Image (cartoon, rainbow, N blue to C red; front, top):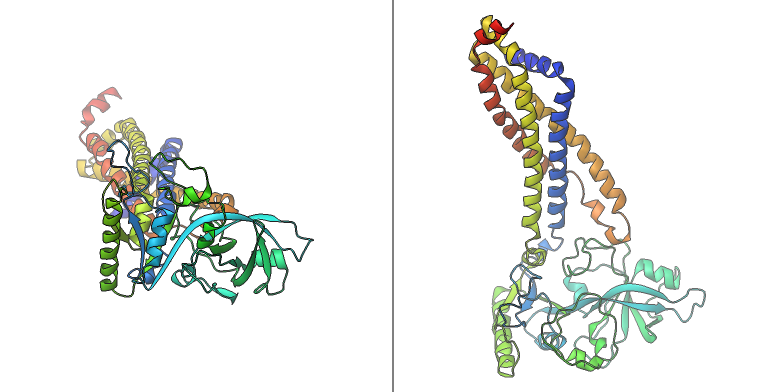
Length: 444
């Protein structure tokens, strides 16, 4: 019997092929757009540091204005996502965490003085402290991190990515070689494996989290001596007169991103007590006008905080697009059903029951939804091909690896549209099945 209704529905659709294909295409466009958006959203939430979820924590200090009209909107909890250099030094000096790193995106002009054939080059990198490499499982091809941390007299060591090492030094091992960083001599202490990367870049969402791996890493502490570039974003709320680099470092400008590693919850609680005491002391010195809030977030929580409310906007956008396309398809389906009312009246006159007419049209709605799902698969693969082609460049080097069709999203959206379209077809199907055949037979 089911096969009989499917055949009737199929024949009815082929009586109006243009409008039938249009309904399926509209559904397919809505489903494919929602699928791509949901897949990209889910991929951006992948946490490469999940194995350290109970150990790594980002730190937020509420060093912001107490003016209700001046709110920090750069995070979901309205607390700044960076701290000042003076606060970074205080946190780094604590011996409570097992490891601690302070970091910010940077860039520098690099030059190999021993190879005049390679011109000085501007590359992007990171200012970090030594523990960064062990905290975020950086894999070395040779050498390792520099030895000192929390030393502000000039560490002058640098870690290169393998591709950058090959660019500046050729195929030879560059560990121990001298390199000029913005004109200052640095010694290469290690080379990171060329195939190591972290995507998304959990430790810093201020830069493109799916971009290429940083070219180099050098000590954040050295910024006390040299005014290196800060490309990670600077937040500020206080009007301050800053005329020198040292005044900037002593200011309330927020640009350092702190991360800590703990071995136990007791260690974490002890550090929270230490930081709250530090903030209260600074409040007595006239700082921290807002509050003494101290927030420690694991890597998953940190990704959500950094993302803000964008995720909700993406979900609403996907739902609206799907709703618009589904509504338009349902309107076309109703117009088609009402157009074939006379055919249904003739079938009623020949003995078909209302249930039979209703069931036929419900199967027809089901076939429209099914066809929309097939179209959505074809269109989705096209969208993913476009994304992989346009976003495989340097700034989105690793995004294309995550933009693959998600089976979970596919099943969710497909079932949602299938149920919505089939149930929505119930109204026009019911109206057609209630038609009195005598009216149309008299008209004939």
